[in-house]
Length: 217
Image 1 (cartoon, rainbow, N blue to C red):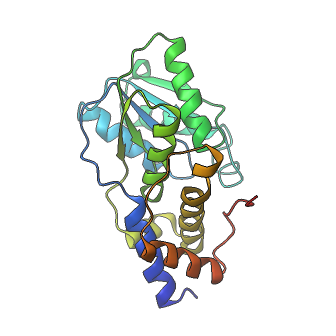
Image 2: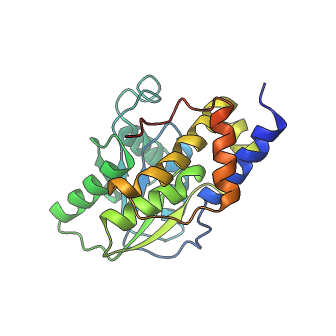
């Protein structure tokens, strides 16, 4: 049973993680691999709206996806895009990345190897990882303009779609932790975290939503 306070704290983290960028035409759209095929759906929708001429799906597998996406997150995203009538020629697959930093680095390398000029990226992630993805891309690819996007969903709608409330709250807490500790490790740019968000994060940790935390050194 998840407490009322935990839901309130999760809502605060959910709102903070979203960047609220307005989608605009970019050189390329990059869909970050995860357990959520909705990322592929949003990427396809933006492509079909003319926001970019080329899609890069990036992602290997993780402990969350190895059973449901055994061929790799990027490959399953590609399959989804093809089902939604995106031409194969408009999709590149980067199949090795196992974290957000590798998503950005390997996607960038793939585009450079194809001699594709990139001045802006529409970065598509899960709703609760927009800020983490943005901060990572700003650190690792500072020369390009980064626009963040995700499915326009409320927290309750997202939980209903995933059908695993605890997993979603654990993921929210994990994303928030990385925003707090990764800047010092050189993995992302620092984001100003309001005191109310920091307090909500601490309460969720105390309630045990910690399965997605990484060891702090």
